[in-house]
Amino acid sequence: MDMKDLFNKFVLFSASVHRVTHDITKNAKSDTVTPVQYNILEYIAVSQPVTLSEISDCQQMSMPNTSRELKKLSDKDLIAKQEDTVDRRKQSIRLSKDGEVMMNEAFGCIETQLLHRLEGVSKEDLEAIDCALDILQTKVFY
Amino acid sequence: MDMKDLFNKFVLFSASVHRVTHDITKNAKSDTVTPVQYNILEYIAVSQPVTLSEISDCQQMSMPNTSRELKKLSDKDLIAKQEDTVDRRKQSIRLSKDGEVMMNEAFGCIETQLLHRLEGVSKEDLEAIDCALDILQTKVFY
DNA sequence: GTATTTAATTATCAAATGATAAGTAAAAGA
DNA sequence: TCTTTTACTTATCATTTGATAATTAAATAC
Image 1: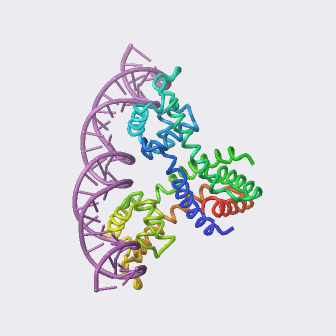
Image 2: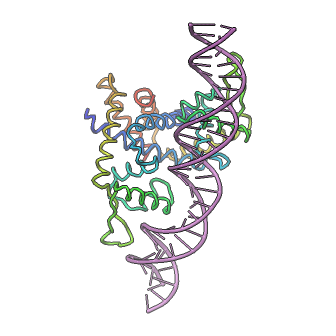
Image 3: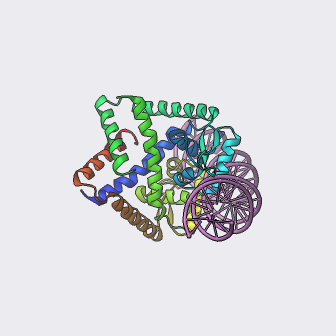
């Protein structure tokens, strides 16, 4: 295994993933939220409930900025904050009803785009893709 | 193959790729360029020579904004513009000497981080990763 | 019980980014 | 030749984003 080749492949691959996910999600993103806010919502959607600190860590943004964006999302009624019963400094953050609706719509849109991109792909290839996602997720992009 | 599962895997996967590439490249990015400028440089590095329009298309940014950022990169002597000999409206854009140096350093840094992330991974797993990258690159993230 | 640490907030600022309008110059089409 | 299209530039503006300092309140450590 030539690590140099693998490295080049990695660089090209991540650029492709960025470009394709941008393509696929650009229609999905409601124009009522900014890109950063959309990313936060996506994270909350798949990981809820989460705390502000967790969002801050995972989205690599400072607590003050995270707090500001969450406040905006809260003002738009897309998320619901709840005080942690055990540690009252913490917040338990979830999508609100409206937030769920928006993200379901977004995910539906992404799913459509993805299906379109995968149409004509054989059953065996789909299995291979599924398997490849698993391998990379566990071995590289953990 | 449950497409719903595959779709969820895809969403989680792209989020992971974004997070991990951010982690891996954050030290690589010279603080003399902005994130957007770094992405442009990375694209030029792997695709040179390129035109402004190609950068605009691929980086999904408007021509005016692309032009502005390229001007900044040019002012910093990181890229070299050359008039296309055939079509004088077009530009042939490459990294300058300084740009090459910077990007080699960045790629070296990314390579180190990647090797670190892959240390302890068996030879067979590396083969599997290599193969998985190929599959996803050609079948999904083309 | 006081000191320290943690979780989150508010306020403020500069910089980066995105969007748009209006322009130039070359190429292509009629 | 005249018109239209293409590739790119310049200028300007609003918004988003990132960074920092200062503050509050709760939990933990001593």
